[in-house]
Image (cartoon, rainbow over all chains, first blue to last red; front, side, top):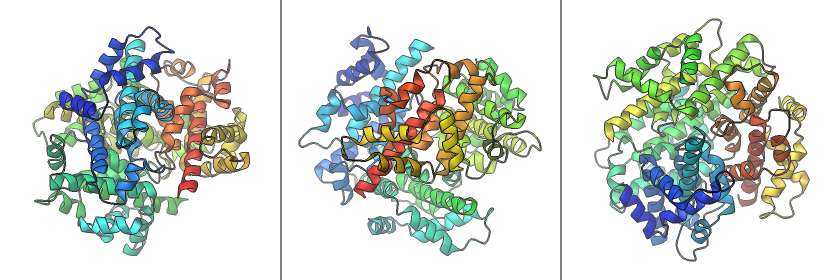
Length: 154
Length: 154
Length: 154
Length: 154
């Protein structure tokens, strides 16, 4: 299952190293010497979790449906335009973010607001629909950061 | 938008009166004289909320996609069989349940476990996929009950 | 830390076997042959989790404060009477319930509504304040059940 | 009740105008002409909500207990030092943040990470314990921002 999820992320333009970069940026103030390899292994550990895999598959299915026109109106327009009051993408991502406890919440919110790295790329794509994917990627990075915090402080 | 949501619920086999019945059952121990009309008006008030409307549209879209075969494997099988570890339906419903605060949580869990009334009908349907819909209906009933509690005790 | 948590639970009238009994009742429909020992070991595993330990300590501190009169009004009366619109106890318990994903939510709501076993004892105590403790105990039992589901279905 | 909450916030060093300032900063990119008065009235509306009032009272009670030494160890040290794995403060604040839907989540996480204005003052206080209060204030500001978004886009 993990391989399927990694493949679907790649088909939507997200490599695990892009997510590891977000983790590294989040952790820089606390662990300036964190290597990309460690960040990547934490991202990998998050993707082992069943509930994370399910949320990713559902989010990508919704983005793709909206993109291909296989979604009824008015939902399709709401998703395509990521209407400001649409919060289902954040709810779905929360199931990922919280996988190592609520300490991931802060990092998720920060990434979702500042949109560094791959998040900006996803968000500014002229054609593709990434309404769910950008929150999912932020959720994975936030959960991986929470996992690092657990390892450091436990 | 509210009309669209009510129509989509009806097309999937759920009348607002079915949900009002769940509310009445939930509230029976506290308000034995609650009329069906009051319960129905509370359900109507829940359906005014933008985040509730969005969650309903997304949940129905996912059920329908899985039903029609417009969903990639392995997600389709997971949704069709409502695999025991699949929790995205509960997450989505939580966005509805919490619309009047966390006091709706208890009622949601109870309905989702005992599955009275329309919930049993949805859950036992031999052909249709109601993986998301049954949690959504339980979420609406739980939120409407929370609203009644707010009116009584405030 | 785990020992401290177990001791505080016992001082408030909750033995781990009481919680294991709730788990056994929750799982009876799915695993009728589950032994009390297995349930107890699952409860023990939930209590290893740092966020679970924190929520328990905070909840017991709040109950005790209200009981001893070390809490300002109007909060004290709200907690002592477990006012119907008070939902902080459910929020706190949610941090426990979700420790193995959102599949624990249903069981939490069911326990909180039906209040079997130790939950009824806590809830009906004539003198002690158990506003937070009963939700915490339900949360631990729901999380332990989710852990069993993960073991069975993974 | 609202007056009690406002008074308790003031006694802990938080004026409503401090929170309104956070709202204004959050909304600057979207509504550069938002007046302090409008922000203040939105903060006031958030404080009308019963679940917000309850969360504030509980959070301040916990901070004060830890500060005054009326809290058992090891919880007291965990709260005083706001241990990195302690997430109960974020959970409690979530009950505030979500009062107008999950769209408040992003702003909460951003504020909690960047800690502008009053949040920095609270966080750097040499003697007082503000482990819960800073998350509560961020939660109120995030909810007030969500309310503005609802007014603009609805």
